[in-house]
Structure formats: structure tokens, C-alpha cells
Amino acid sequence: ELKVEQNPLFLSMQEGKNYTIYCNYSTTSDRLYWYRQDPGKSLESLFVLLSNGAVKQEGRLMASLDTKARLSTLHITAAVHDLSATYFCAVDEDSSYKLIFGSGTRLLVRP
Amino acid sequence: GAVVSQHPSRVICKSGTSVKIECRSLDFQATTMFWYRQFPKKSLMLMATSNEGSKATYEQGVEKDKFLINHASLTLSTLTVTSAHPEDSSFYICSARSSASGTSGNTIYFGEGSWLTVV
Image (cartoon, rainbow over all chains, first blue to last red; front, side, top):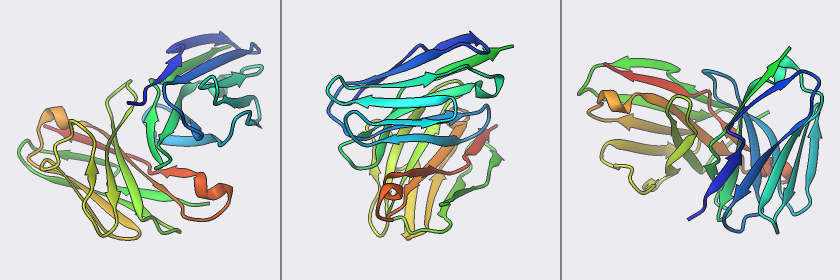
């Protein structure tokens, strides 16, 4: 059974600082997704990572995938308040597009 | 870009009644859609895989007679919560994958979600 673990669960950081969210998963998969969720809203797609060593960047966010270590990271550079949200990683179980989600990381960026 | 639309966005129903939630892919065909539920401050849990023209596949622990799924066309899947109880109150989200080739074919689009409150 595929398990996806995210840490930290909660992250409070100051504006301008850098930090990394980690996503570990338990079985082989070559498709990993990162999503953002604002309170009361659905999911916004951030990144799709499809292969070992994949790195994608959008603004202050950068995601990477190491399939051998079964680890993905979401790095935040020079955080701003607008990045406050909950971030989820999700792994595609058996390439079926059926997603198993991590527990989520609630990010609060303080002025 | 591709859009998945859910309706209604919010619904309140009485205990014992049934409520239907629709999930539509607006500009692409989706042979497979997925239904998730999310409790407040929790993660998303996969409930079932909706297959166009055939029976849905339910995850372990999800009652198929309580959560009826119908995927009658390539753009519409419905989730009916039957004999709803207050513990069924949750945020229900559907997703669909575009069958387009290339990178966009690996993108999974989520609907806006439907808040269900059972009173």
C-alpha cells in the first residue's frame, strides 16, 4: 500500500526566508504532483514531476524529484505573504492517475 | 486550459435524504474521473474511480451503496450521497485527466469542490 508522508505539517516563516517541504513515498512511482490549496478552495496545480532528477521552477517555488530516494522537495525562496496556503504532494499509484495525497503542509508567511 | 466544473458548490440537506454532485470536464473528454473527500484541516482521501460506461471502482472502506457513482458520458460523472447523515458532511472534490498527448496529458485537473452539510 502506497504511503505518502509530508513534513513539516505546519510551517511558520518570515517573509524573505527560504525553506523546504519534504515529501517521501513508500513505493516506486515516477509521477509526483504538487498542489496548493487556499482555505475553502479546491486544489491549484503547481508542478508535475515525471522523471528522476526532474526539477521545475515557477516564481519563488521550485520542486524536484528523486525517484531512487522516493523523495520530492518543494523549495520556497524569499517567501512572501501571498504564498501562505496549504501545500500537498500527491503520488500517482500504479500510473493510473489515481492520486494518494500527503498530509499537507500548512504554510504561514509572517510579515 | 482544461477546466473541470463541479455543481453545486455548496449544498445543505436533511438527514436521510440524498444529494447529487456533478463533475463535468468542460473542454476535454475524460474516460476516467476520480472522487475525493476532504474533512476540515485534513488531506484528500480517494473514494472511488469513476469509469465511463462501466461500474465505478471503490477504495477500501468506502460504501458503494451509499456513494453512488454514475459516469454516463465522457464529460460527466455524478456522485450521489444516499441517506445522508451528518458524518457525511465534507468537502467533495472530483478530478479528471485530459487524454491529450504530451505534457498536458499528465496533468490532473480538479473541480472547484462541493461543500456538503447534512443537518
